[in-house]
Amino acid sequence: MTAKMIIMCFSYWLSFSYLYRNIYFTMKLLLDRILQDGRCFPGGILKVDSFINHQMDPDLMCEIGKEFARLFAESGVNKIVTIEASGIVPAIMAGAEMHLPVVFVKKKQPKTMENMLVTNIHSFTKDRTYTVCISADFLTKDDKILFIDDFLAFGNAAQGMIDLAKQSGAQIVGFGFIIEKVFQHGGDALRDAGYRVESLAKVLSLDDCEIKLEDA
Image (cartoon, rainbow, N blue to C red; front, side, top):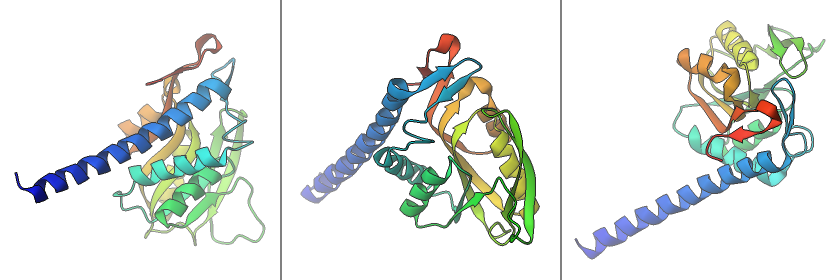
C-alpha cells in the first residue's frame, strides 16, 4: 500500500469517525433528555414540554435539525413541510441546514388565504379534530417534500399530510419525527404504505408511567 493510499484510508476513517461521534452525540443527547425531563401520564401520553414543544432547548433543536438534514441529504427533497405549532422549530432547523424553504400547515383558516387545500386531522394528545389548511401556492406538483413533526403516535398528522400531498400532486420523500411512540403503531402504518420514516427516538412503552426507549 502506497503512502497516498494510507493517507486516503486514514482520511476516510477520520471522516467516518467524526460522523459517527456526531450521530451518537445527537441521539444520546435526545434520549438522555427524554429520560431525564420527560413526564409520563396515563393513556400513553409523554410530555416533553420543558425542552421540545413548549419551552425549547435551542442547542438540542439545532442538533436535531442537523440529524434530519443528514438523514435526508440524498432524498431529493426540495421543500420541508410541518404542522403548527410544535413541528415548526425542528423543521426550520432542518431547513436552515439543507437551505430549503419551510412551510407549515395552519390549524386555522386565514381569511386572506386563497386557493387553499384542506383536510382534517385528529390530535391524540388534545383529543380534538382540526380542519387544517395550506396554500396551494406553496404545495404543488413540483414539490418533493419532507414532513417533520415532534411526535409520531397514531400517525394522524402524517395521514393528513398524505391527503394534502395527494390534493396538490406533491411527492412525499419521507417523514421525520423527533419522537415515535412505537406502541401506537402510526409508524408501522406509514412504513407498510411504503413511506420512508425516520424517528430520532423511539418510545417502546409507557406502561406504569415508565419511559422505555429503544437503544437507551
